[in-house]
Length: 399
Image 1 (spheres, rainbow, N blue to C red):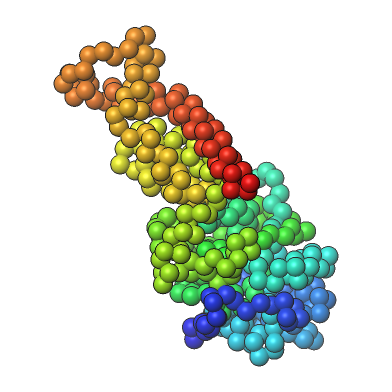
Image 2 (cartoon, rainbow, N blue to C red; image 1 turned 135 degrees about the horizontal axis):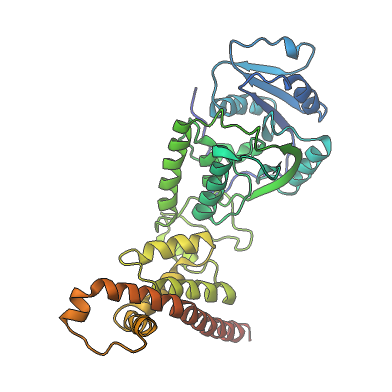
């Protein structure tokens, strides 16, 4: 399968889809020869869109007779099916590709909602959020879905509820602008994460289909696939906290004209330093940094703070800087004293090899106990101070 073509867009922005009429190509993934394929294809055709059906080479196409669809045969992965569809879509003047599994065929009203969202934000990647019934055995697939949602928020700060949905709207401009390397089961995760890093909006729209957890078996998510995707997620998680800026293909609507590029290190650093910097966000970042900095997270304070700031979409520089207020010896010593008092009813007054050396594990426990008391207090105090200060500075600049 040839690699996905990459086009160079001036000023690192993707070409806007607003000048073109929205034209959608539906790709139905039938990897398991479902008995509901024909009815699902009929529903998809009612939308007026062209439909491509992807199925294994050995399966009969009798159930598709009389239907105006394009059939792709072969042992294709989801990635290969999408890449093959991209070439067909461009020749037809298509603007968006919609992938659907047989568990996510939307009702006509749902599809109208998706078209409305596409027209409102043509450069967004849109996921269909399925309705999981409550109760029953959720199994490995359901657990992995929650894990995937968590990883996405940790890596990008974006909160989605169904990142494993098979119903996804891909703008062709976005697919052609991203530098994609995965060709296996991790392709979808790579597209979503890199698109978020590149400034592409991620949206979710509810689907009327109800997916029972008992029927949601991980037949396409074997252990090896999950393992590979998990390894990729770990890589992306550590990549998300490195100071190397991510390549942007969409301008920030709130801050137009500000771009992040390794070719402009000073501008990029200035942009990174001023991200998420309204008074409330700075206060939350400072409070988070002090809260975690007070805890005895020996030799891993900075990494934990960076991960937490990324998860909550807070300013990383402000969080790490505020945590330096908790450097030894003052804050750890106060925590130990509080913890010692809570354990023994008196303060520790003897500083010797016996108390700090041989009883080091006891002091570590007391540090933990004391930090659990002081960390929320110190975090709240620093957050309030930062908020008041930032508000005054903002008012002075606006005056």
